Image (cartoon, rainbow, N blue to C red; front, side, top):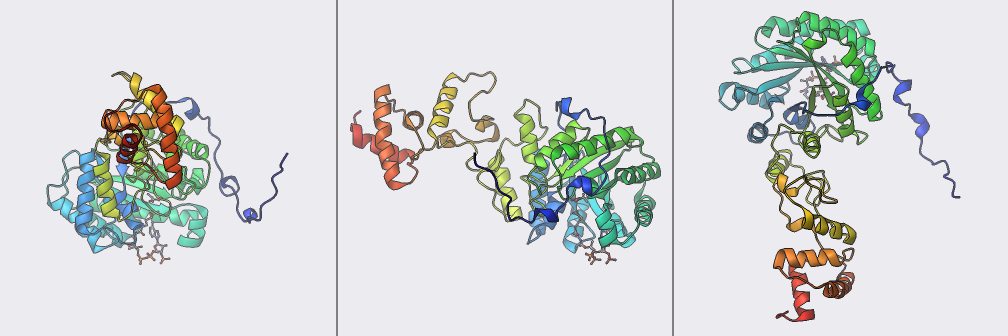
Length: 442
Ligand SMILES: CC(=O)SCCNC(=O)CCNC(=O)[C@H](O)C(C)(C)COP(=O)(O)OP(=O)(O)OC[C@H]1O[C@@H](n2cnc3c(N)ncnc32)[C@H](O)[C@@H]1OP(=O)(O)O
Ligand SMILES: CC(C)C(=O)C(=O)O
């Protein structure tokens, strides 16, 4: 038997989450639960997504992106960090002074816990129609407290309470409050509960006027089950729970942001922040398009409309100036395409027995038509393909039906050709080869 040998990687330099912060024991229920309704989705593309771009969105890109999110059906949208730049401030003013914000859409603006920047933030939303949320953040994890903010637990708590008090003083009658203990996933749980208790008391949190407690995995550092436990612990222990909307904000550093969000919803999260197709700091925010379509694929209404996903992709790519990977879930160019023979065979057979009932085509988790994709690209032929796929292309594109013997024979011709060229054979090339082999009249 081959034995794996120790690698030269300096893994001893790293510690797992359990060595860094207490993870409170929780009487977990999330493994037995199911997701049956969509959480409230909150796109943060215009803030967290935007702050991660080499070239932040200009006013016209911001507007285009905002209109897209409204059209998709998002009801709460974080629109910027108005104290960060004049562009951000002006965009929020545009929303306040125009009719771009539908009456049922809540606008969220983001601020640090600093009096001058809070004042600027409050100024930016003056006159905004509809609900406004002021979202204040401060990093609460020990490394950030010690190294970045250079404050003790109590000093940081005082700074946070002062910021919250300032928002209450300047705008308490007209806005709701959101707080993010940034890097929640590396913060002591008793500290977060202490902060939540004070803030929800300060804002007199009730079901009618809830406070949003947003618990970010600012940098993803552990397996998703750990985050789920951390969320369920808060779900079970948050003071004034019915006056709190429990929100999550996963990033994707370990590539498991989607799993974190889904397990967090099982664990009691009611609201999920992320970006459409997963732009955002470093490896990105959690992708709220994939999350929504994962629900759709399980028969749960995602409450947002992705029926024209290519148009959405075009706008997102234009605004972020970044291409979307061809393998990106649900939207990538290749995600409804099979090149390999046995997959093509199964898809062809699945299409043949498909009726109007439940979708059950092998290898296609959803009907591409649900997101506005055609069927042309489902089967593409190269040297990995087989007779079923080749016959499917000839039949679906040109109405040419091959006998079983012809299917076997013609596949060998195609195999030789694609092996020689090393390339894909387009439907046109397959048709031409077919005519070469069998003559036009066949
Ligand atoms: C996880 C996240 O996504 S957090 C959001 C990150 N987004 C951004 O930073 C984009 C917008 N930011 C900006 O435009 C600027 O950073 C500003 C306007 C907020 C602040 O600018 P500056 O005053 O130049 O400070 P700078 O950018 O260096 O930030 C560091 C300072 O902010 C402090 N700070 C960091 N977070 C917070 C917070 N949540 N509340 C209050 N102060 C904070 C730091 O302690 C540091 O203060 P110090 O200089 O006294 O040590
Ligand atoms: C502060 C929060 C909301 C955030 O952007 C993060 O933690 O990534």
